[in-house]
Image (cartoon, rainbow, N blue to C red; front, top):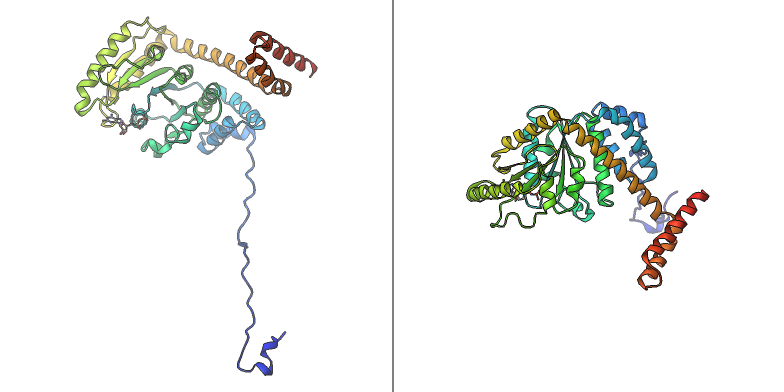
Length: 365
Ligand code: GDP
């Protein structure tokens, strides 16, 4: 229709026709269909073929707290189990700043020189921390992170230490089934997480620094006792002599500990991750240990003991979970706690009444 202002009385003024406005939605955009979750068989096939994308997806399921994800994950793990086990598993621990990332980068390249594939996993019980740089950030391992034969996975972040550690252990199984024959499990050397790492590796490597004379201070005795090798990092430049002195002190301290079950005498070495000095010697030690424990049967024994440990750990975790997530218990727990705190109920009676309620509820199901 002609615009009224184009009429005779508005001479001199021309109103053009409007033009069609472009759509605010891109008509060429094809909506991606939601990614279909792979079936258990597809996961297992992908993993055993060494497909890293599928491996990553499976690890994500292992880490998920959703029951439907867990169900698939557990089935995948079970089917991958026969393909796992064929690797060396090394735990690497050290306080923040000890040089774990720098060292793992050079250690990784060193072990990959022999061929094979390396997975670097981590256990970091503090979700806060893994959101930050420590253990969470792939770029900490600059060379490994772009190496075609390496797979780096930061720590699962949510949950208790036991839960996080279990997920890391399950991830080891998947990685091994995917052909990773070298597994590093990194942890911050600040306490209980070492025990968890120790329960899933063949060799436990403790990275230490030379300090100000009191080298042994602040290192928990239990952690030193777990170590199959202690390595003093940053043995370079001005620090070289101090590192050697620290090594001597560690050696004499280790003499005071009872002989390890493995029959292996833990060694103390110095090296520099940054300047790549003494790295070969560190790994010669690890390989010598592997030969030693494979020959005397301790390798098999330790792996069996670990499997047993994880069976009981899983039972404990699932029982605890089932108890605390029971709706009746959830409804009662705080009230019982309050009664205990106010002195109206003893801890034991409170515990008994909660457990009785729980078992009664179970018997009704
Ligand atoms: P992490 O917190 O244990 O992972 O430690 P990093 O690998 O991030 O290292 C902490 C700091 O120590 C960084 O500034 C590194 O450059 C430095 N560093 C690591 N290894 C060495 C080493 O062998 N010699 C020296 N001089 N510095 C090092």
